[in-house]
Image (cartoon, rainbow, N blue to C red; front, side, top):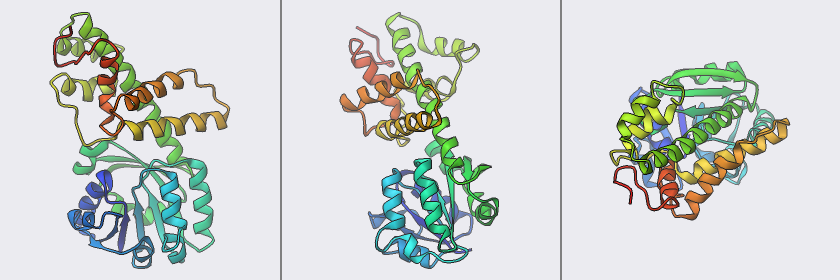
Length: 296
């Protein structure tokens, strides 16, 4: 199978290296032309060139406007699409945008699989990502062997847009558990609790969550797990979640506070750093607290 990849940044580069290691040469495109070689891919000069030479094309891009540009622009994927081409969008995108792009590609005989990913940079490097896929089962099956080089769990969620819907729902829970745990940990530091012991308590109690298990045992020692999702990308996902549930007619009394936490992080200069730095933003507003240092 001929494999193409567009977007060879933080996640895309890691995933591409897994695909290459799995025995599939990759033709890659990124606005930073040096990234193709870094990821072990053969460089291409446009998304269209990638699509023309590939049976399956993966996208790993920041947001729906960028995905739309890559697909629809001059020298984009749509112009080179043909019968049988499968495009797998690993980005966290708007489900409404995904459905529109699916329709455009279908008119040319190509298929779009929206494949939300979860697990972060470490899982990408280990090949243990979780995939939430929308689109036809047949298209997913045609791409499955390549996806299996970087994902341990591949789940078909339903029709077009279902994968990106599942990803936004997951990312909201990710964001709210991170923001809430950050707030609680700052309070614990100010209250004088020993933080490793407190995390042991949380992780054997009803407050346990992904952040208490996997993030904060490292953060309290000063390791913020750099290289993962930035605060501003988290904020983008949370806003997309709010738009999604509003369109579904679902009340979301908890979203505003979570969004505010990452807006504050951005305002305080942490937006382009890993989203875990939201704890430092809350600490700044709480008297300059850092978890790895005694509070004033």
